[in-house]
Length: 225
Ligand SMILES: NC(=O)c1ccc[n+]([C@@H]2O[C@H](COP(=O)([O-])OP(=O)(O)OC[C@H]3O[C@@H](n4cnc5c(N)ncnc54)[C@H](OP(=O)(O)O)[C@@H]3O)[C@@H](O)[C@H]2O)c1
Image 1 (cartoon, rainbow, N blue to C red):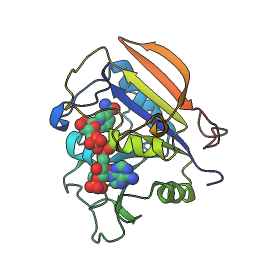
Image 2: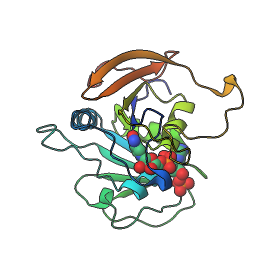
Image 3: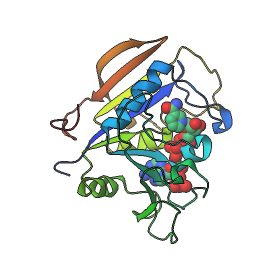
Image 4: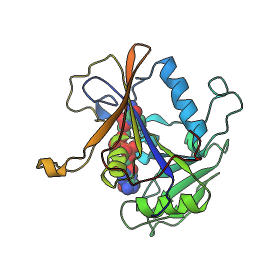
């Protein structure tokens, strides 16, 4: 894609790279300072993407809170949901701002207060989705997880900036979901190399920002910061 949107991945983890409790039970890792930063990231984006497992686990609203960003507008909420499993009472279907539920081609039906987009067979075709969002005028996409969606975007070369807020906690349980969750990595060739851009102390945690080792994805010029 010649001029795709700029894609920011943002996650919060423990020191040992865990993003939730075992069984995908929700876990608050962000400090107040970090929450404010995430809301600013949302306000800078025109679309925010999460996976269906995050919706099922956390029921996030994904809007911009006035207390964090006065007069900020909320991005389009995008849920990757191949099988159309989003619960009818989910916060993303509250109608408070626009929502796009992205399913596989063979899923029919509608969702209350949301638009449906059929995109791919099996899992969602991310390139097609990004192209669709670009056609709608989206210039900046924020991906908020979970680990499976985060890894899909990274693996596809669709991340231009990756922020990890590392909270001063350890988990010590291998059953807990990880920052990035994908298939096996059998050799160094299966890994992805990133370039360190910035490390900042944020409250009691660390904010670490990476960018791709090789340039060539979305560009930030004129794209909101
Ligand atoms: N700390 C943080 O920053 C943070 C942020 C978000 C979530 N979380 C935590 O992360 C956990 C959930 O993460 P998760 O990895 O299990 O799930 P996830 O990434 O939220 O969702 C993954 C699901 O999305 C669907 N999907 C459709 N197309 C996809 C594609 N192209 N690539 C990837 N996924 C696609 C698949 O389900 P279908 O096949 O049914 O479509 C897949 O199983 C929860 O514990 C939540 O609390 C933590």
